[in-house]
Length: 231
Image (cartoon, rainbow, N blue to C red; front, side, top):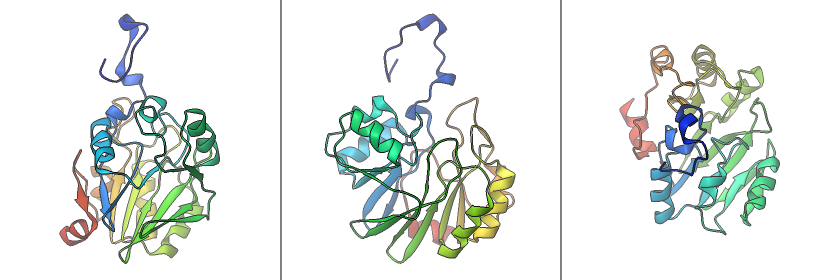
């Protein structure tokens, strides 16, 4: 197994392994800095670490966003942003440079301002507003559909990344379409699918109903300006 040891190889099934190897990820560059969730592919994550990562954000303490096996490969002293639950977990894993955000808190990372915003998930969680270079990005993180999310429209995001898988504490594609229409971002991008074969969704159920939307390709690096120019 490429990722970790398995005690019971006969009954082992990767479909039920919450592992970043199965994540759909896209590195986003803003202000010349990289920011992404732990739900990136392990290969892309290792590559980004070699280049230098300003912040690793764990929006909540679930295994597909804060994975101990992955954290063990990250140098001590790497800057993490997470929830209070996530902070306790990361510190128990030996990480020392961890900041916990509550909903409404903001932190400056280089030229970026990161604000934790409301998310309705099965554990303590937040979404993200990331501001820099005159652009505003919204990352829903993991969240159920909730009218409190409508307040994101007040940030006037240029890009919105919205979960669509409809399982395990997340809104479905139809609800994501409704939210995207209310938020009114310049470009909306479906998120949190194709991570696990048993917990996926067709992103066209989102993009077919949002004219200003697109699907990001697996393991590909994008610049915000290019995404906005192409849609």
